[in-house]
Image 1 (tube, one colour):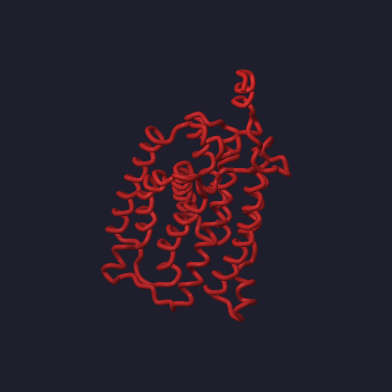
Image 2 (cartoon, one colour):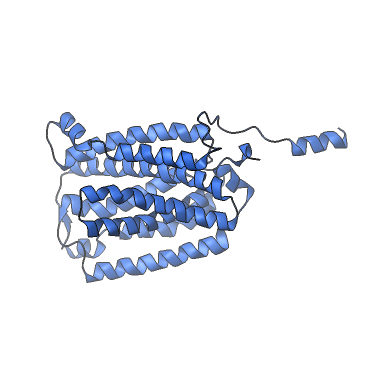
Length: 289
């Protein structure tokens, strides 16, 4: 084989992954807007009414079941879109190091439960097994749906727009997490304003944490598992239990874990997460090259 043939093989571009039928790769901002509007539409669907129709009664179980169904359907639609875009969000071989580096974030998810109250007996879950199972199903569906939206599509699209430099990675994490927090504004229609503002704030932080996991693992299902675990731990006692969830000890523990998680995230951004060729697979850079 001649030297020219060798050079031709080296410089030949690999085949583009994904078909991008809707041309979203060339218009990332438009793609983000479309996906956000679709996600908002799914969130606003009357889940409790669907669940009540299926179970024959209203209540927490009906809400869990109906919302789980709507979000599962939304996940399937967006999963097909992510595949069409060719995003590398389903993991690579030998990503064990990334999963290990993500383990400290599991502590954040576990700590979202009212551990102090559960240990002391001041907080308890009184619902039956069927209700707990439906609630777990709901949390799993929320994790899958919201992660395919924000870490599976929105984050790669923003990263595609910002570029895979260290600065681009940083701003992609910030922007996609801010969008994740912003979509919770819809809860102003159903919750107290102060609680919603707080939810927007910690949703931004959870979004940044999940974006870190995506960068480390390149696996949207890892992000979904972390997200679902965080929601289940933090909401089950509030939705299906009794007792004083927040007290001084629990607030202090949460603050300490939060600060440590923030410091760990800064360490990851400065020392571990860096631009490389595999990062470009995450947002399908081939079409642009």
